[in-house]
Each structure stands twice: as structure tokens, then as C-alpha cells.
Image 1 (cartoon, rainbow, N blue to C red):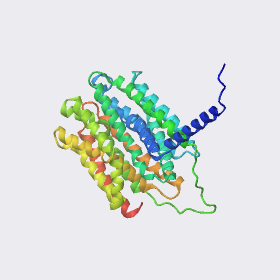
Image 2: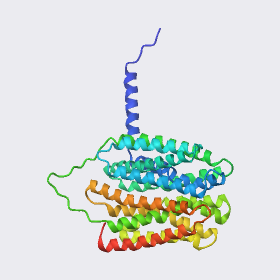
Image 3: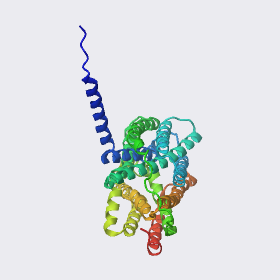
Length: 410
């Protein structure tokens, strides 16, 4: 005799599935999960998508794939793409955050993986440009979704975990480059990072894309005329100089260390230190600004970075260069976060335009640094570009003080 089906079983199964889905949704929409997904978004798009090139550049040069000049051009193409992507995001009207984020994730993974082949220098230039656009898209839209979602949950403090993604990605790229330095090769290193970025992208999409369905809830009050936002010309100029000030070392530090130590291990260890120092940096500088004020802390971070940038060429020896790596990693994300905080105003659309403007200035500075190295050529060395970057940071600190006195932002 066949067993009589229990009519209660499907009900129980359905209830169990519903309970499981509800529990899964609670976990995926919890502050730790949202912040962790934000961390992974910056890890893959910024730490890997932008800065893996820094880690793998020495080996690409050793294998005859690039020289210093062509490496500088590739870096400049990536930063040009980031500038274009940041402006596109900042001045878009009614953009679909989910579509932009998904497109950025896919493009970042694809261009990272495609760098693991040798299609020719011109194709590499296109890949690095598209990677820059994708990095900007992921940064803008993932950050927007993460910060808004955490604010709605009353858990804005979890945003510090989100910003640790850049440092985490730099650490991952340094570790992969160290592993490939033992004989794996630079191109397999790119493909390995592409697979890692792909795994991270799946997790990011799983958590953040559903949250991106919700649009902004606040609307302007009818008839309200917002006051004209304060000007930020001095801040924008200072931020542009900061972009030039950090990017030479952030692009060529492993090559610079390779020239001093003669070993690939020491060069990649320096880049690893940049990533490790960047992990807690944003939270540290922001917390310090609560006590001391945004302008004084921003100026202090800029001066500290100037010292870190100049150390590798002013003081001989690997220890000084390693100390410079720590100071660089410990300041560049803090400078970015505090500068963007100063640019904000109550009107969200005006804030986007203002942050887009200063980001454009920063992007121009980032492009100039690698181009200066490329123009000088393979045998000119790094002393002049590095010292020029340090001087630019000193000038940035001066302009920040002028902005503090005249613009009175923040």
C-alpha cells in the first residue's frame, strides 16, 4: 500500500522556507553585512582595479612587458578613466544606482582579468581607461547605497568598515604579487586577481543590488530657496595638489624600492605596508577631526604625507622608504575623506556637484604625476617627480589654511 501523504508537510516545508528566507534577509540587510559588502566593493574596484597595477608593475618591467615610460602612460590612462567616471557619476541626472553599480562591478572584474593577457599596449591602455571608469562607478554608487542603508538602520558607525576596502585590496594585490614573484609571472597574477575580484563582485551584488532599489526618500520643500553654497576654490586647488602629491609614490613605490634594495621582496613589502596602514586610516583621521576640527587635522595629514612621500629619496636605505610607505598609506584616504566632508552642503544635489568638482581637480593631479614620470623617460629616475610631489603637498597645506580663513567650510 502506498503511504498516504500528510497534508501538513507542504505547509511545514513552506513555513520553513519562508522562515529561512526571512532570516537570510535579516542577515543580508544587517549593518555588518552591508558594511562588509561595501568593503568588498572598494577592495575589488579600488584596491585591485586601480592599485594592483602598482604591485605588478615591477614584475611586468622585469619580464619585458613594459618600461617605466609606458607604465606611466598606462597609469595615467587609468586615472583619466577615473576622472571621467567620477564626473559622469556626479553630473548624471536620475541615474539608476543598481544598473551603474552592476555595470561597474562587471567592467572592473573583466578589465582586471583581461590584463592577464598580452593583447598589445594600445589595448592595455583601453583596458586601464575602462577600469578607471568602472572604479569610479563602483566607488560612487556602492558608497551611496552603503551609507544610505546604514543611516536608515541608525548604524552609520559601520561605515568605517566600508572604507577599509581600499587598504584591504592593496594588501591582497601585494600578497598576490609576492606569490607571483617566485616564478608565477605578472600575467597569471592579473588573472588570479581577476578571479578574486569576480568572487568579491558576486557577494557585493548579492547584498547591495537589492538595497539599491530604494531611491532617495527626501524631497525639497516646495517654494524653498536654498542659500547659495559657500565657494570652495581654495579647497579644490588644495585637493588637486594633493592628488598630484600622493600619486607618484602610490604608482611607482615598488619600483622605487626595487631600485634601492635590489630585491622584489622588499619592494612588495613596502606596498604591503601602504595597504596595512590604509586600513584604519580613515577612521583614525575622522575621529581625530571630531576633537581637533576638520581643517587642523586635514592640514596635519597633508604635512605628514609630504614627509612620507619625500623620505624614500631624501634618506638612503630601505628603513626610511618603509617608513615613508606607512606614512603614505596612513594618510591618503584620510585626506580624501576629510576634503569631501568639507565640500558637503545640506542640498544633496549641490553636494554631488561640489564633490564632483573637487574630485575632478584631484583627478587632474593624479594624471599629471604619472605623465611627468613618463615624459622624463626610463633612465631619469624618480627623485625629481617625488620631490615635486612633496612640494605640491606643502603647497596644498598652505592653500588649506587659506581656505580655512576665507572659505570657512565644514
